Length: 433
Image (cartoon, helix red, strand yellow):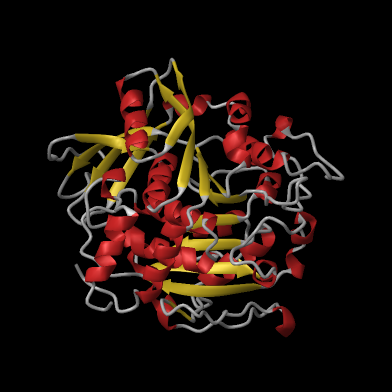
């Protein structure tokens, strides 16, 4: 395995997450993954031979729950499976990974299924059938209100319908809205209540859960839904799609790895921004994050504008083996907390012109990749676990970059995820440490 010289901070973050685990509740998809391995992907209309078909537990949300649990978080899963062999298999696998499945319901529908093809380079294509995942209702989420409201982080994604994501945000935050001045009825439009969130319950001892959304796959949603989201995680392709949907800073189409010049470029002030409001690159105390911007190809511009337009605390753009790019709003940095929190009134986040942002590039960790299936979910689950333990968004992204890179060295999705103890052992053996 190739080593990276900048792992000392990762070791400290991992130790911190292991010693102070937080609570993560994941709402979303549970699937059975059927995987075929081929030399090359078939062209349209073509047939190619594959190695033996394998099956394993999957679903983006299920994968994220396992990743978060393996890194040390206390994890609960909310979702639905079918009354079938795949459903039993998926639940058993989650339980074996330490995930609480008591809020997963079983329905007379097929369990969600993903048909995955992996080529010789470790790249994959996926066809997804939602099955029972589509049956999750607001009533199911209300029944899971205890784990949603007691969580430090609630992780969501759009393998679930937008209505489920909206309802999950609403239920998670509803216990913290006793002093809300205005609440919007939104079931009709599948958007959450307009939360005036002070981040503490009536006892004054508890923050509202942080909402992390894996905006994948890209779908059209009511913008009001996003008013309940703190952090968004996307990949390079998804960032480009979001930029196009918001009709600004469209990114050029490029092959995977085409953003390598991120590492060498400098951040320029937006041409249309006043100097005082221009996004800047935050100096990082972390040795694994290096100062960087991507105005040359639009990455930084699109990411910073999305943070402002969507009213986010932060956004992470994953770049595969190249690492990731972290953008945070100034209000999350100025709050004085170790991580982006949900205790700032959301009305303060509604004005994009009032926000400035800071961005840091996190370098990837070179490995001999075998299979990239589930690596993005591993990244998301690790970010959720790290933030739940109290680490900053930047620290969490750095840890997740390392953990996901290691997952790429093994075949499968959940089966490729290392436990925190295994990762700690790897760090001890790394010659750079």
